Length: 152
Image: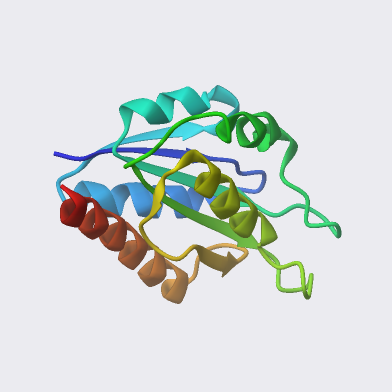
């Protein structure tokens, strides 16, 4: 059975809501899930997971990584996650045209450096996940698990 670890950063609760949707989706698929807030997470913990997931919001007019996940992000590139499945989701605000949810892209690039296999396209949603975003997050979880099953 696959082991999933979801690390997330959430200021307003929007990304936490997304993380809970993804976690619940994995549980419905009969997969063990660990949900960890970024300030309690260590990137090396991904070594014990089969599916590594990051949820983050994009902060401010410069599309910055949230302060509480910067260290995790920087340390992640030093981890060897070869053969593990990765995925990223996040919340943003469409008000920031051209910078919407850019931290999802940043983490996808960081996962590439680890040797992890991208299991699904990143999911980006505006503010709190609506029904469309909820459906996308459920599909995201299933695609990650399908990729894991395909590889094993």
